[in-house]
Amino acid sequence: MDSWSSIPISGMRSRAREEIGANTTGVAGRSISVKQHIGDSVVELILVLGFFLGLPIVYVRALHHQNVAGEALNVRLSLLVFVAVAATAVWALSQSRSQWGALGYLALPGEAALAGWLSLAFGRWRNSSDTNRWLLGRLALPVSALLVVFNVAQGARNIAANRAYDEYDEKYFGPSNRVEKFITAGLEQNPGRGEEWLDSTIRTRLRDSVFLSVAVRYDLVSPGVLDTLANSPFQVVAVSAIINQRTRAETLARSYRAHSDSHVFVQPLAHNPRTPPDILREIYHRHHNRIGIEGSLAENSASPRDVLEGIATSAKHPEEIHALLRNPALDCELLGKVASYLGGEGKALARDYNIARMNEVRPTVCSGKTAQ
Image (cartoon, rainbow, N blue to C red; front, side):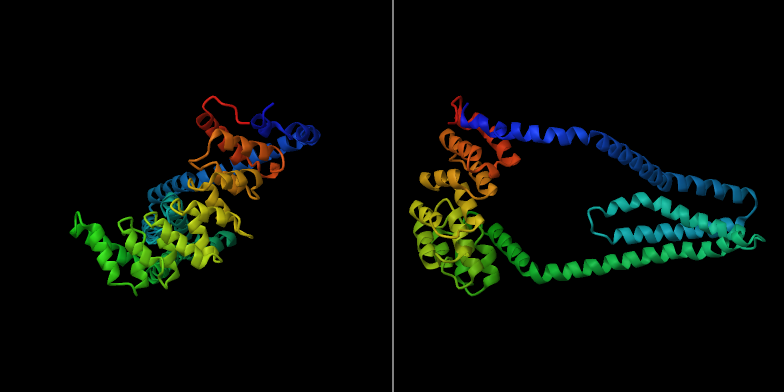
């Protein structure tokens, strides 16, 4: 049996024998639990349908009955409360920016119908000789009014939340959003010479950290300007210049020599396919690399072969294997090394998503060959 086929099977048979007993003895208990869950779901469905559909139907019938009975004042009061609750609910929902906010409209008919029905109960029982009905009647109208208050309060909370969100967005993203609009407009006004315009604009704003942090992400920035930005005193700008794939290899090598002890700089260097292979190899052999650095090396198509093989046979985290399996440089031989490692010392990394990815890429990278 080859190492590939042993991955999904190795260790599973013994584990299956150990678990069969526990699985079979728990069948009865699980079937009871499933039945209880189904029963609970049915009850919840009935309650939801009762609120969404049942309450409006009951309210319409009660309203019709009061109208036929000649209780015009009760009907008018009930309709007034119904409209007030519905209107405040619509207003409150319209203030929400949540992607789920529209679902609130489903409950609106039930809420308005409940308020209208409570108002009818007030009109019918407020002078009842029965103490219980009299008490319920006196409480019904205030409760329906509370629904209006609740909707108004919810709308006010939504407005306050929107204001807080806008203030946060303006504080942390407003300046960069304005820079992005400025650059977009500048590029549109300079068709065919976008790189020249952007380079010259950057050179005039080398002390504007916000502008530089946005501009450096554009693929129109020339390698010469990126070389300057890689030495920026603003760390976010220098790191972004390292990430940019137009940055020259010699610039990346110089950045590594200047910041070889900084994970913040080393990780984007490990990720950039233009980083020289000897630098990538040196990064791999650094002590105490973080998982993000190893993962970046594993996914980098420019990583030297010995680095990729080292990760394939000694990875410490399943994310590193997953990154390697996404590497365009992955071939059948390397896939075989991953399979052997996951079937042996690296069995703990053989997560379902890694096995699934291996099964997915094997027909493509092996082309009829067997991963050894």
